[in-house]
Length: 292
Image (cartoon, rainbow, N blue to C red; front, side, top):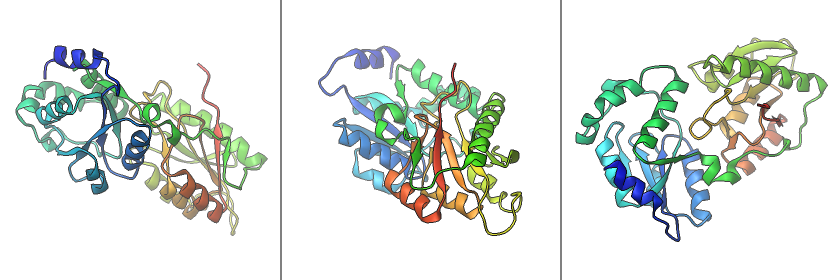
């Protein structure tokens, strides 16, 4: 697909603005985004990553796509009049040998190899640059499904006390400092002490280490999971996300709550997350975005 053709397609004004392509990885979030965009009146076309995407996504117009099959991808986007693209869901970082290159992928192989070099943040930035160089308008889930953003100061019945609020402020500061070095988005803080830092293993594995490390003994909960975007992070492709599973793992780790950045966090299912937090007796709070 030529860049000129895609650019002309995007510039052409239509009543419905064209379809939103959703490249869907694993988890529930791609389904929620698809539902939200559909409810807004926009048409969607799902690119379901083979072996990862939830089969429920097949109820929308879709293809099942193997990573690396660039020819299949771009021809499908063209055929379905896709003017915008959202990348959402869990996708393990592939090795070049794992890519299923079709004819289009083979032509782009040198560029694909360069994309896979670097830290996770660097790779994601290169993916966006790759699509944009082909004339594709990359959007964030929050831009096409804004109702999934967490904007409340507190969610649910429980509120953090003064000690926990101090932990939240400290945790957000430290997470942003570590984000400058392309470390993970999350830290666990308990009474001013950093218990764990999210690295390549992800939030879930980090939380599993925390129960034995908390400073408080006995039955009470203490400590907080803080997740904020990395400074300068492209929120179109890597916005922090919480869901019911996050709440359950925080509860299992013996922590008192979760703090995320206001307006810059996706919540998979607000009603279920709120109910799970209320049942577990943990808080969900937000911190203001960092000022530039």
